Structure formats: structure tokens, C-alpha cells
Image (cartoon, rainbow, N blue to C red; front, side):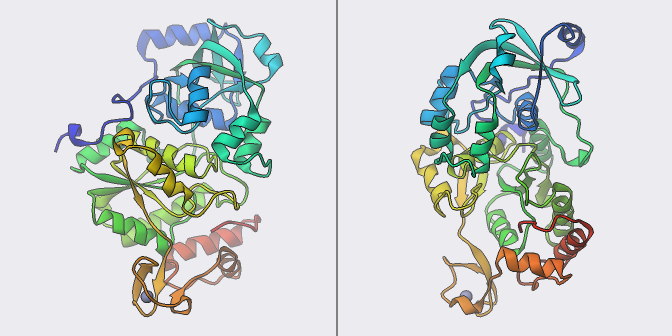
Length: 395
Ligand SMILES: [Zn+2]
């Protein structure tokens, strides 16, 4: 099989904003003379995904026309589907010293310059409107909405040139760029690949969903999100250990690629499900799993909203094929994993545990039943729960 058989990136070309060679040295030298904007953790992860084409066809932070169409229509002005604003915000005071047409150095928290923005536009925006349209609520208790409200009042739009990717001390072997996941798929001879987004440990229910999908495609990209998440989500190092023991013990190693997605969670539910799918298309996935309440938080979204939103797009506009799954569980009468689509039995025949029940078991050093969690995964979670002081992990 050849690389050409893997799905094309969104918009046709994998964007690469990395500057190399003599141009890089010149830009790095010039950057020391430019006004500098410090990036938030979220903006930093956006720079990382923009740099390597995870956000293809975007080549920088959105300018006003794209931003407005994305918020209102879930499309870029080119007409391409794009559901989430990718923007850089600064305070009015900071914006006052920055000029359209000029360059701005973008630095990490330590002050290291990672990229240069060619500032095309400064523009104001309506935070409440963005919250309503993108998050379907203006409630500040929603973590995605709270993040929008906490941002500066002025957006900086323009093309990026990237000198260096953000440095991460953790999981260096799992930080594959879209070009690298595509190469990994090609090397394995895969043409069709299903992407699985997660910010939780994988228990039996999600393992079952992944394996149902794997019956129909060549391989699985297990692609946990390790960017900024909300308090209460399980730390990414613990989750990575869970994925490793699960894959080692229960998956054919030549059918799975484990890699991390540096994106920040936005908890935008339906819109974020489409966003997650488009990003995975850039990483080379032909299929994407959308479960119940995908990327949701609290009670802001209906159970199936994140699946229904895909009906608003023609399959050719998306390219990547969503695969919808219902809640799954172990059924004692079926004697296997099942879902409401396949099991006719009653609730009492099913092994169902609430998040609170599982948390309490783990904190007490008890493994959930093997019908719910693989024992190797439970061992990792028990050890982590007892080592750490943070008591309220979501599972
Ligand atoms: Zn059953």
C-alpha cells in the first residue's frame, strides 16, 4: 500500500508552519527585536497543532471573517467545515502596542520565543455570542465558556511561522505529529484507520467500542487528549499507564498506534465532536468514533447531540466518516459486552457502575469487577488513587 491511499488532510494539504535552515536563524534573530506576547497553555497547544498541520487548512490564528463564519456557520470563509474558533486573545492594553501588518513574537511561559505571528488583524468580539453559538450556553460554570470569558478583549489574527514546538517532558515517544502518524499507518499498510478520542482511562465499555470499530477498519489510533483539561479529570500520566497496560494485554500490537493529542479540551460537546473528527482526519484517520455525550460536560448537551450534529454536513464535506456508538456494558445473560442496540435484557442483568461507585472502590483499594475494568487497568488506577492526594478523579 502507498501513502496516497491514506485519507487526504482537511483542505487537501497537510499544513507545515515550521521554519527551517537559514530562514529560521534569521527569524529567530529578528524575533528578539519584536514585541512579545506570552501564550496561555491553551494558545500554546493551538500553536503546536497549527505548526504540524493538526489544524489543516489553518495557517495561523483566525482573522475576523473566518472567526465570524466559524461561530455562525461552522465553516471557514473558504466554505470548508470548521466548527471551533482557533484564536489568540490579548488585553486591550496589550493590543494597543501591537500594530496590524507588523510581526509579533509568541513566547511560552518561560519566555522562550516559539513562533512569529504576522499580525493581519486586531478585532473585538462578543464573548456572550461566542458562548451561545459555540457552547450553547452563557453559563460561566461551563469550563469552556469560563475560558472564553477569562480571555482578553482583543483577538490577534494572522499567519504563523513556527521556530520550535513547545517542549514536553512527558511521553516524548507518544508525541507523533500528523505526518508521523500518517507515516506509521503507511508503514503498517493501513488504509482505513479509526480514531478514538479520550480523556479518561479506557474501561471495558470503550475497549468494546474500539474493537467493534476495528472489525471494520485496518487499524486504531488511540489518541488521548493530554492538553489542558478540567480539575477532576485523571492526570494524563496515569491515563497513559492505563492505555499501555490495556494495549499490551488485550490488543494486537500491530493493529494499534497510541499517540497523544496535545489539544486542550473545550467541552463544547457537539461542535467539539466535529472538531475532534476534523483534527483526526489530519492525523490520517478515515473513521472517528463518536460516543454518547462526546466532549460534553455537566447537563449542557443532550445525550445524542454530538452524533446528530454530523447530519448538518454532507459526508463529502467532512471526508472522515463518523461511527456512532451507544452506551455499552457487560450483560450477564448475553454473556458478553453489548449495548441497548444488541441486548434485550433488563438493567439488573447488566454490570453497571456509576463514576462515584468506581471512585469509591478504587479509593478503598478495590478493583471494579472484571466485566467493568481490566484488572491491569484497575491496578494502575488503585495505585494512582492511593498515591495522590487529589480525591475526586472522574472515571
Ligand atoms: Zn443482554
